[in-house]
Amino acid sequence: MKETIKKYRRKPRIDVVPLIDVLMVLIIFFLVTMQFQDLRAINVKLPKIESAGSNLVRNELVISIKEKGETFVNGNQTDRDDLEKLLKTSSRLKKKPMVLVVADENVPLKFVTEVVDLCRLNELVDFRLQAR
Image (cartoon, rainbow, N blue to C red; front, side, top):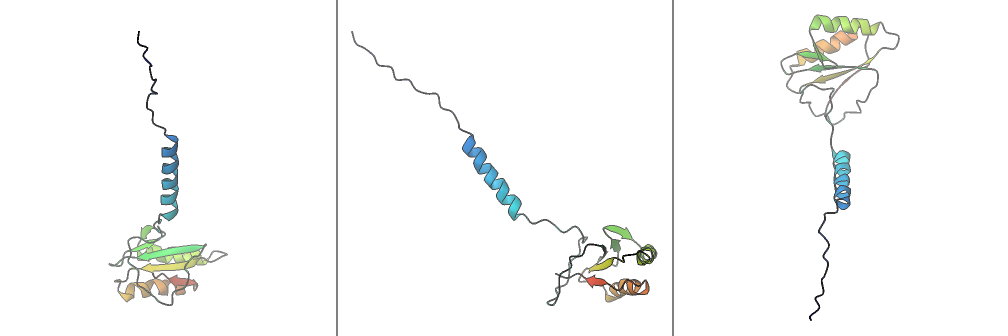
């Protein structure tokens, strides 16, 4: 009688631990290298200024001006009268806010000068112009 030797084969299985490790490394890599969009500006293409300094300020009003003259304050659309009232109210605060003017590079100069003039008339002399 012939003896048969049976070889036992293990069932194939997929080890998911290395897969999870690789996925975690990829997720961390993409989170670290991802660029977050600056939400202060509203679809405004900024002009380039070579001598521009840092525009990181804490207590600030961000006034964005679109190409056709539409004005936004901290992301909310306003007209000239509301902007004037807001600047007048802000000038009465104990600690006056800094004003950051973000204007599209194709905005006519008159819209930017109106905003700067409103700031100066309301004694908000600490303002900056945003650039790339």
